[in-house]
Image 1: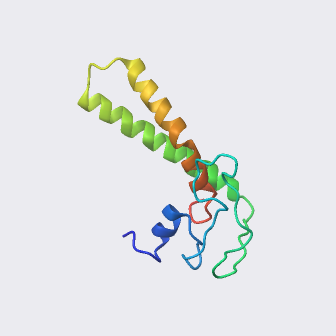
Image 2: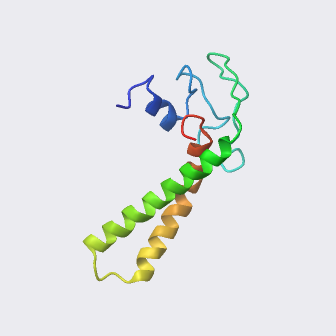
Image 3: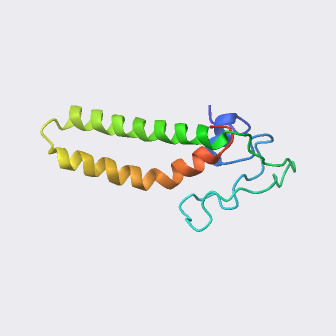
Length: 116
């Protein structure tokens, strides 16, 4: 499922969407906020140019929103099932911290052309 050369591998490892070998971002770590989201102009391996089609960022916003909602619902349901008497503020604080911590990764993931 996550074998090298598959689409999912390329998305999660931020590899070139065409050859699945070269890097896509200048810095693969989305938590290096100085360079977060900086995309290479071309793949270092296959030399294919990385260009975005019209409306690309709208698709990225929808993907980011969907990922955030999925995390929110998963944490909410998990906390409600496992700890039904847990105070509401604990659940919301956990969700907020988790979404803030995952925000750079979601941003990098939605800039990848295979997801938007």
